[in-house]
Amino acid sequence: MTPSPRAKGRNAAFTMVEIALCLGVIAFALVAIIGVLPTGVRVQRDNREDTIINQEGLLLLEAIRSGSQGLDYLTNYFDTITISNSSPAVAVFASPEAQKNIPSAGLLTNGYQIVSLLTLPKYNQDRTFTNHVFARVRAITGSAVEKSQSARDIAFAYQVVSEVVPLSVHPPDTTNYLASPLSPQEILTRSNLWRVARHEGINFFELRLTLQGPVIPKGTNYDVLGTPKTFRTLIAGSIPKRLGNATLIWPSTFLQLTNN
Image (tube, rainbow, N blue to C red; front, side, top):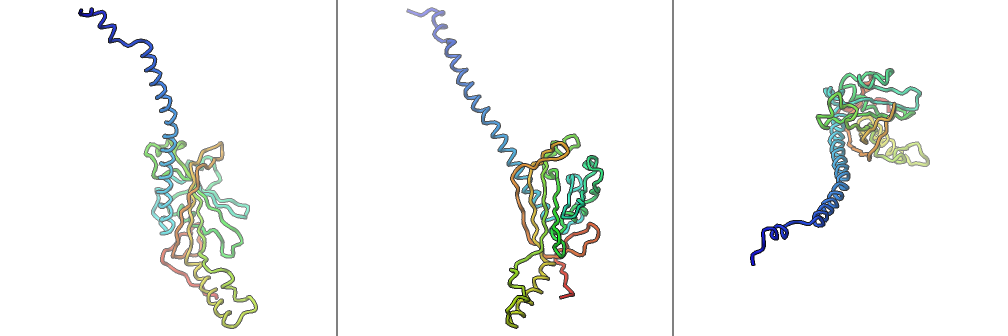
C-alpha cells in the first residue's frame, strides 16, 4: 500500500523538541566561545605591547649608545622627560601638546635634545647625588591609526627609565692602596689598578633602559601598568664635560685624566 503524501511530509519534518535541542546546543557553544574571546583579545593585546616595547627598547638603546643627533622625529612621540635628584628643583621637559598641562616645563624641540637628556649620567662626578631620568613616550612603532591627533589620548604609551652608570669592575678592596698594613709591592699594585679604574670610569659605561607600559592617564597624573623590561649594553666612549643639557656619548672617543 502506497503512503499518502500527507504521511510522507509528516515523517520528514522536525519536531519543536528537536529544534529546541539544536538551539540549546548552539547557544551552549556560543556561550563558551564568547567566554574565551576576552582572553584571546587580552593575549593579543599583551603580545602586541611586548613587541612594541622590544622594538623600541632596542631603538632607544642604540640611539643613546651611538650618540645619535638627527632623530628629530622623536619629538612626535616623547611627551615628557623628567630629571630629579636630591636637589629641590625637578627639571621637566615636555612636547608642545603636553606643555599645555605643564606650563613651567621646558620645550622638547629636537632629537638631539631628547637623546642628550636620556644620556645624563646617573651620578655626578663626586657622587653627592643621584639623577633619576624617566620619560613618557607614545609608541613609535605602533598602529598608524594611533598616530593621529584625535587618537593621541588612547595611543599605547609607556615609561622609560634611563640609567647611564660608569663601568666598575674592580672591587674597592683591590684599588685601596691606602689600606694598612700593605707591603710596598701591594701599594704599587693597588695604586696602578686604582689609576686604571679611574680611566675606565670616564671611558666605559653601562647603559640600562627600563621600559614599562601601558601608561594610563589618571586625572593630572598617570598610572604605569605592565611588567618592566630592562635592556642593557656596554658603551665604549666618553661623555665630555656637560655643556648646558648636552650629554651625548662620543663613541670610541676616550679621555685621559691629567691629575692622578
